[in-house]
Length: 239
Image (cartoon, rainbow, N blue to C red; front, side, top):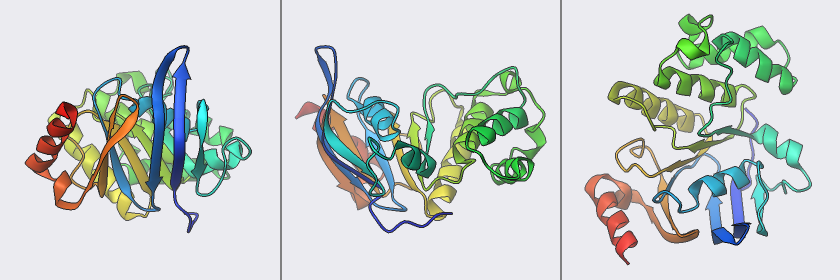
């Protein structure tokens, strides 16, 4: 894995308008290398928009971002090689097998020894027995795991996840939570957007609450564990 000393993410005064509607109204955010940050907020708070900006899929209307010190406007290709993104759409092809999907994306990244890299990622995510299954035949939980495998193919040091627990049953949720905790232990920075306070937050270092496109509260330590998180979240919504 590439090692970087700079901040994984730095956002300053980020705003985003869609027509006359402002999805983000001036967001400042810093994420350290190896940090696991939860981006919380109700639907419509700006979480997905912020993640898509950080993933270089859309540009901010105002403000600046840096991905490990790089400006996506001038160094977009370099930024994309440092990050992996898993959104609402898995970006997987249902009529292709798991391996075929990964081979396709590995070619897009120009990776060497694609069969070996694909096997390595499948084994790391416990998917080796599913390599030849068509994606459309997999459960929601397994498809989410394959989507993460796709995002990890090029060994990114920043992982961006948008509502990764949506639609998962209890067992799949536990499995995904353990996977994310292990990825953090490998030193990857993780930003996970969610509106669900019951899933995947045990291993987080910090939580940022977005409301109406702004950072409303930043929490860490004991404040983001169990019932204290729920109380803090509800108090922020009501303030």
